[in-house]
Length: 225
Length: 202
Image 1 (cartoon, one colour):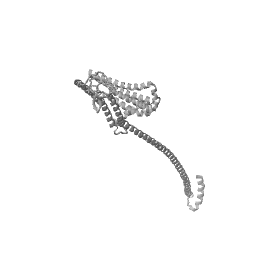
Image 2 (cartoon, chains in turn cyan, green):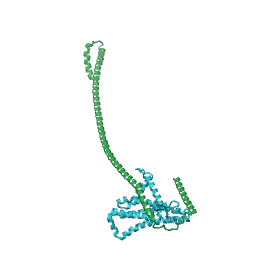
Image 3 (tube, rainbow over the protein chains, first blue to last red):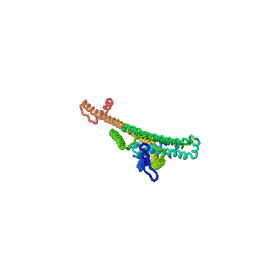
Image 4 (cartoon, one colour):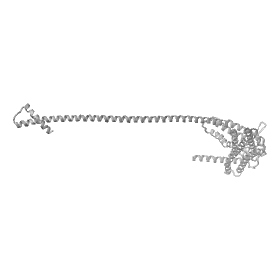
C-alpha cells in the first residue's frame, strides 16, 4: 500500500475483499450510500398521508427530480422509468461532492470526494450512457439502430459520456485542489469562502450531470429517431 | 429570530474554528499535504467496477426505500384526493338539491303566509263591516226608540198641559163666577174652552 503524498493520488487500496482491492474512495461511496439508505429507510418506514419530517424530504426529492429533470423527457413512459435513475445520479453526485466539504476531506490521506476521481466519474458516465441506450431501445425498438447510420451520431454517443465524465471530474478535482492549496497557504477565512462557493458548485455539478443525462435520455426516447 | 441568528452564526464560527484547528493539527503532524495538482491514476479498473456496483446498489436501495414507497403513497394520495373530490361533488349535489327544496319550501311558505294575510285582511274587513252595520242598525234602532220616546213624552206633556190648563180654567171660572160649580157640570164647558184655547196655545 503506497500512499503518495499528493492530492488526488490517494485512491490507494485500503483493504482487500477477497482478491478484490477496495480503495478509500469506495469506502467513502459506501458511507454515502449507507447514509442515504438510512435516511430513506427511516423517512419511508411509516408513510403518512400528510407527510411530516423526513418523509417530506424524500417525497420532495422524488417529485422535484421527476418535475425538473423528468420534465425534459417528453415521453411519459420513459420519464417515469428513468426518474429513479436520475434520482440516484443526483443523490450520489451531490452527496459525493458535499463529502469534500467535510473537515479533512482532500487533506487527510485517503479521504476525498469520490467525484474528484475520474475513475468514479467514468463509471457514472458509463451508467448514464447505458441508461440512454437501454431507454432508446426500449422506446423505439430496433428503429433505434437507424440513429447510428449517421457517423456523427455514433461519435455523439462517445462524446456525451466523455463530456459528462470530464466535466464532473474537472470541476470537483479543481475545487478540491484549490481548497487544499488555499488551506496550506492561508488557513484562515479564505478556504471558508471557497468552501461556501463549493456548496454551490457541488449542487450545480450534480444538477448539470443529471440534467444532461435527462436530456440525452429524452433525445434517445423521442420518436424522431 | 435574533437568538436563532446568533445560534447559527456561533455554530458556523465554531465549525470553521474546528476545521482550521484540525487542519493545523494535521499540518503539524505531517498528515496534511500540499496539493500538487496531479491527477489520480487512470484507469483504475477496480474503482470503476466498484463504482458501477455501488451505483447499482444505490439504485436498488433507492427503489426499495424511496421510490416505491413514495410512488405507492402518491398513488394512495391520488386515490384519496379523487375520492374526496367525488364525495365533495356528491355533497355539493345534495346541497344543491336541499337548497332547491328549501327555496321551494320558502316560496310555498311565502305564498301561504300571503294567503293567510289576505284571509286575515278579508276577515278583518268583514268583521269591521259587520260591526259597522250592526252599529248602524243599533244607532237606527236607538234613533227610532228615541223618536218614539220623544213623541210619547211630547204627547204626555201635551196631555199634562191640557189637564193643567183645564184646572187653571176651572179655577179661573170659579173666580169669575164666585161660585162653586160642580166638576161634572162645568167640565163640559171647560173642555170645550181648553180645546179651543189649547189649539191656539200649542
